[in-house]
Amino acid sequence: MTTDRTTAASEDTKAIDVQGLRKSFGELEVLRGIDFSVARGEVVCVIGPSGSGKSTLLRCVNLLEEPSAGRVTVAGTEVTDPDVDIDLVRRRIGMVFQSFNLFPHLTALENLTIAQRRVLHRDRPEAERIARANLERVGLSDKASAYPAQLSGGQQQRVAIARALSMDPELMLFDEPTSALDPELVGDVLAVMRGLAQDGMTMLVVTHEMSFAREVADRVVFMDGGVIVEEGTPERVVGAPQHERTRTFLARVL
Ligand code: ADP
Ligand code: MG
Image (tube, rainbow, N blue to C red; front, side, top):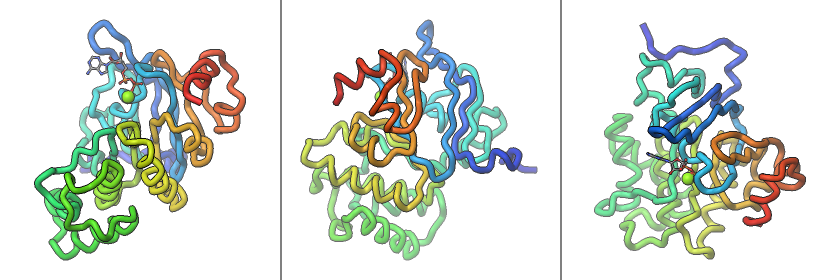
């Protein structure tokens, strides 16, 4: 018996599949019927005004919020199935938030090894080897012994990305990962994310960084008022939006 229900072969190329997703908080319906999917290896950027439901959508993908209706499937496992072991599913999803949420009393290296040891039961040498490789990947090999307070915001966010990578995620969710950073620190974080995309990581990224969306995204999704207003290539959605609401939003952020 397994609770990991793998769906038909045709679904195998989908990292995320969302069908008829609705989410209400009390009387407020925040997601009003969302259908979309992300293919394995695809980079999808979600853009849209504040309050449009972007974070709630991301949080429904790993069940930090429980959908009110609809189906969410991640890497072949239906997470909205009541019998699913959500901890097992979450282990396959890396999540990076606006706030870095590092443990302040642990070094960068220790921040990367703790979940590997506790959740994946890796021994210390293996966890440290993987942690060092991921610190190198984000350009911070020389900061292994630094505490979060000794790092800039951009460096802390890169440690947070390295921490997520150390769990060998099948896909990564990013919720405005550069919004809390001083402008001069944004570029280093985006460069790391660009590298991940080039390495073939599946990524769903909520961002206001239009140049990143333009250069890196395979597809851009514009949300407003809890629905997807339009989606398509960056050239189409950012370059030649079809809807007035998209044009109004872009005029404000570009
Ligand atoms: P975005 O990320 O696009 O800014 P959110 O998904 O964070 O939008 O929020 C969409 C709407 O849902 C907002 O009106 C917000 O106030 C509301 N909301 C989000 N989380 C909660 C919650 N836990 N309880 C009540 N309302 C919430
Ligand atoms: Mg948000």
